[in-house]
Image 1: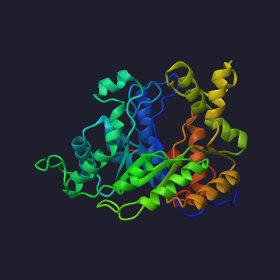
Image 2: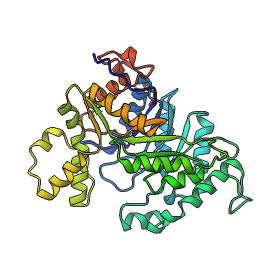
Image 3: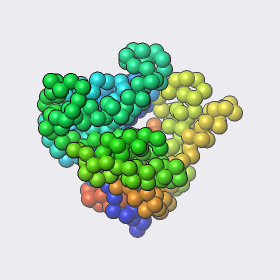
Image 4: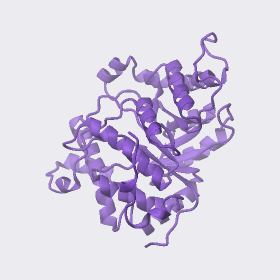
Length: 354
């Protein structure tokens, strides 16, 4: 067993309810709920779910609904969204939904928000939005905050019940440009870049410098997010990343984001040069390897970024191997519940309320 350890930092999970080849979307949603129980048993800090619309490879389209199921099936882990895409929704409804969640599961709910809109014109029309809606994200954040705090808003006679007066932590999912909006809103920042890109580090520095305390958060808080794969060998860890890399390559070349394909099938694919280029690009920029390799890479990134937390978003076709990766990572991070799991399983014995 390795003696490598990562410096003390919170570790959390973002699960996108990825569908797997030959399986129904409902199974992916049930697996997300089970996965939350497994993450809780290992000692992860948060479990978040995502929002995607009309994507064949993703079953998670209603994150607040799924978050309610996850919270009901767990007891300690924080539960939230990574995230609700605010341009797709009315801020009053978003405030009400999180108010209901926080009222049902007090002290366990996170409000993760993003500014992406639908992938195609048809999806955007169906959602009643357009590409320009991203430009209103800052104003939407301010209005959403006001519904919780009772602050100034466009319709002061309207109250978001039961949200008003509740303190639900706000997180903004952002790229380099969006970090400024998180700072201005006084929200926590969630930013991709586990590969340690310098642009990400610069954005984090700008966020901290520009942060304005808000009614929901007094100090800046940085979460770095991305794929982490840990296995017995570097090649085995790389193979965990292959299904997602191929799905990305397929979407770029065929316009459809597919369910996850087994790594063994990807080995035998006759890819075009264009597909191969996207596929190889999809394998880069992640942290993967043996326990010693991953511990060294994450420890370096946490030191350089000053991250308060790491959010792991890895998906793969083989669920048992994926759970093994999360189990190894939990041990490396010294998560309190992971040590009792040892080298073997233990998680299969946990009962989940579905």
